[in-house]
Length: 122
Image (tube, rainbow, N blue to C red; front, side, top):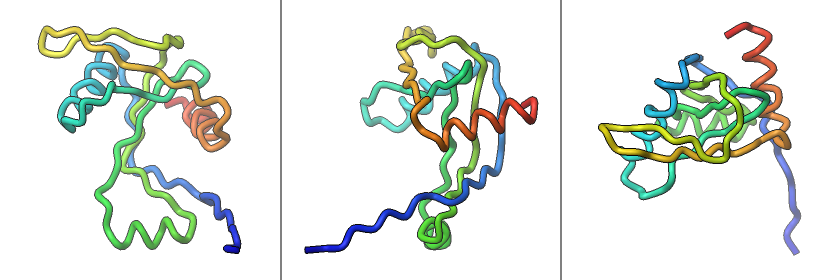
């Protein structure tokens, strides 16, 4: 029988923080989801009045090595202040698009991230 080991993330390194107005944030989310052409419904995380998403780096060997050591690098965190709605309607190029908000209050890393953003008045 295989031994199971849990190795949680020890550190998140965020390289850019971008606070946006809701009227700019939600169309950006929808546009980025559309550009990926996966057909998935655009979604963002939500916690304590902030909706946010991550901008990711390409997967390269150096970042994989960092992740194996417990350090996760995020290219950016884009966020906006907004109340929770399970679905937020926005418009992209004249078309209505729905962006889902996913509550993440049970994720301690996201709780710490939102505290960080609020303490630093970003």
